[in-house]
Image (cartoon, rainbow, N blue to C red; front, top):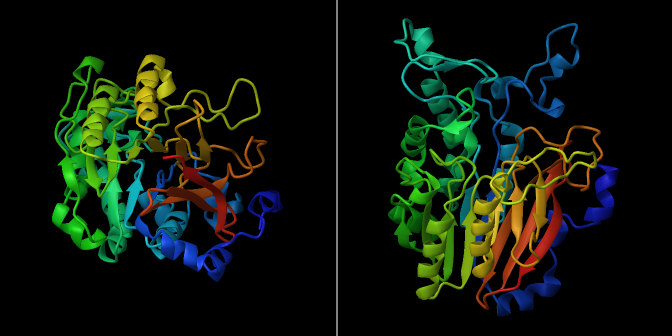
Length: 408
């Protein structure tokens, strides 16, 4: 185990956490009624990948240039980290797994005939593909291939008790070479590849054991923000018991880097009026950037909704008003904070993508290069417990990183 992590983790391992019979009576007196987990950002990067994910052969640069491991080079997925997270989440008996975006690299333009280079910095098209190879290398086909690989990885979870709830990220909806702006074609590709999960009530009931209620997957946009496309199945919400779950698209067409704060306000108000007691919101980009670096200016710069302060503040006001918890990703790091001293922002963009904190970099947190996720347990009394788990870049034992009990 990484010695720098030992003081934080102590002796809390999964084995000790789940094998302590002294608390059996307390647990029975207040049973868990719903368990869900959340993480984001498992996609790989073909150019700026983390050194720990390199093909061992590539370590000898006299033999070959640096390259990703085997299948990761083709499918652009950190399969080793992401598959381990999936297995452990299932061992924790999570009823749902919210994935907070960037499950694929994509970042191109999923229209007919467009083709981005490896870094995504330039794009050609639209042209009529002349050969089969042109078709295979198009952004459209590459995007669908990456979705298919990711869906194949999560398929066993859907068959064995964990419903996958997807959240759109910038790599799913934006085109890098177009100026990092969302495209309608990319939103359509999202619906084509994730729409069957958003939200299949019958399958949800079969997997989770109870049906979702008050499902809202329609065109939930804030026209005042300049959103110009149909947001169906991109921002959506539903209830499970007295818990309300809302997903927000933080990069809608016409309003990149902005959350639909107006829609969220009306959505949470409606949930509150019908008796919801717990409010959980999921989006890709953090409301407040976590500046993990110790250098000046802050590293990695503005990464979240704080690029547009007025929208960020409107969004966070809603979070605070309803005592909601906001789960997000985008920054490839783990962090839990209370930006205004009350509501929590849970940053878990640590599902396998290249760590934002570089190897050897001095950072503020001991877990800034840790693959991590959070599992939440809602108890009958109404108490909600958040436990963050993770393992270090050397794939050491899974540890408890942090535990929080929500005030509401």
